[in-house]
Length: 254
Image 1 (tube, rainbow, N blue to C red):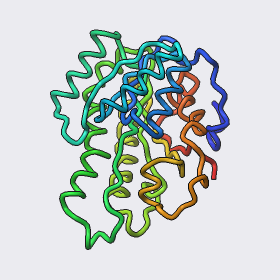
Image 2: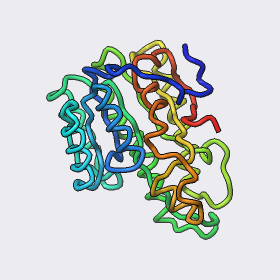
Image 3: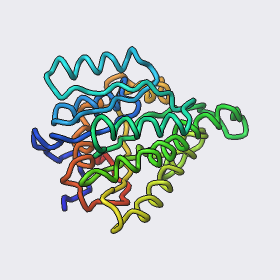
Image 4: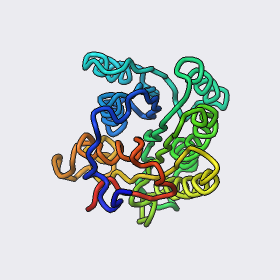
């Protein structure tokens, strides 16, 4: 097994994900877009999930133009989706693709940056629903498709404040602590009884819209582009990480 202290040093073969089917949520921009493009470039059929069809369509077109496997486009708002919506996605994957080899939970919202005593209750509930509850519901719904694969990987997106919280991070930090608990519970339940491995990945500071929202005064080029941290995602989603389960990992060593 690779040294997991700096998994972004991993080098994937060009055919790492050939024949694999992978769901990426929040695939329209930022880290989700970079992951979708990277997975497709390594041979995967990527199921692009997001709430903004125009953004997803641009990623779809970019994958097709590059000659990679034709992706699947799924318009789905995690804040509004029902159990029926998630189950329908599972059935569609099984009917069209046969099985699911990977699930990257990337979609998330920041909420408010303010003291909890001043936090809006409705916003708190929405952040928990998008960042945590939908992760449970979607994973649970996709279990049949994941179990049909020879091996499968589920990646939950964590955060530094989901492992050591700080003031003013509110519902976002709480949701990411929940993600770590969800990951650990599922990983332990599936260990030695399933072909599914479950881990969390903290992408670290990257140039995304959420980072700009959280740190509006930060210099524009002070953090790497999402494409620069994709080796860590490739490692966890591909077969070279078989046996890695229940780990809280970082995409950047700093």
